[in-house]
Image 1: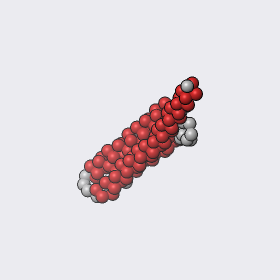
Image 2: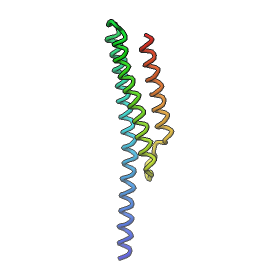
Image 3: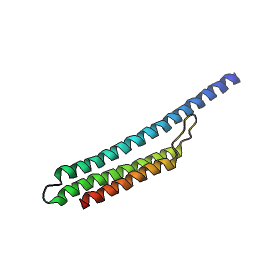
Length: 124
């Protein structure tokens, strides 16, 4: 009887470990999805500036484009924050988790690119 109890405990632990591994993988996919959404917001900002940049007054098109740049910044920051919090709570078992530094590096690069894009939109 004790062997059966140990086997079911091992199986329960395995299932828990697999669920945690699935969550680690889902965290990677979710982070990537947020990054794509942030880049789409940045692309909208550039597109708005390109389409409406010739209108007068030009500051209106720049202001609207800047809203989308700001949204992309918020998305990148939120993606990093949520991915970091999730990976901090989990232990990977059979999968290789993305390091916290990788999440930060990707988000930081895209934040710098967004800020640079916003500056260029106002200078053009």
